Image (cartoon, rainbow, N blue to C red):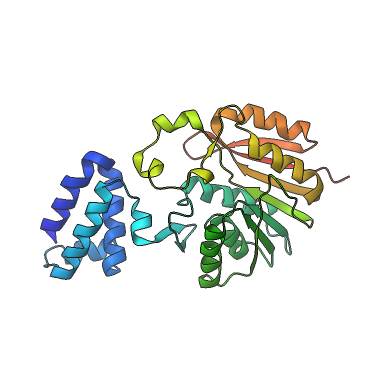
Length: 281
């Protein structure tokens, strides 16, 4: 065990740094052995079986090719839940967990809320809200049938009742009226690719990440337009956003007739979320 840990650290630290390397190692042993951090410390003096060593070597090879550990294990943690993930969906980020918390804090125990999640991907937001809110009616949209298959699998395994629809929101209008519309749409400018890590660029779905430099608010414009007809009076719009465009997005929300527009920073101090409300009358 000690020898294997040393091997992993020496191989991974040049690519991932100390902190991420330790996080990856914990994921590997949780995936292969079901161990937590305490278990790893307790078992450190013990030998590993040839099978486990072989599996670790396979994982290490894939990690050195910049493949995300979440795709290798097929699992990702989000808001205390274990989700299935694959290259058809983005790996859920900690910032998006914060978006879920902002929503639950805002509605503060209200019941029977109608929720629309636009661009659901793995279903992480929709499922978390279905579990955290009181008796919600949750609808989740995505353009990708593969993503929706993954989201449905996650919803079933986590025993949540969600209506999933394949929809291209740029071309069609969903039906219904909602108390909450939430979206983490594609928002990374194409010009930002040069600054991104290979594990994202080479493996995560670009259609869920990038927008053209000449139209970076593409999805936000559409979502705010849809909110005019889909949001119930007094309903809320919640968006995860690119900090580059926070001022423009605040202006967009206000010009679309939304009120109480607020840009909220994430735990790293970046403008990451927009909250706005449709007037009650």
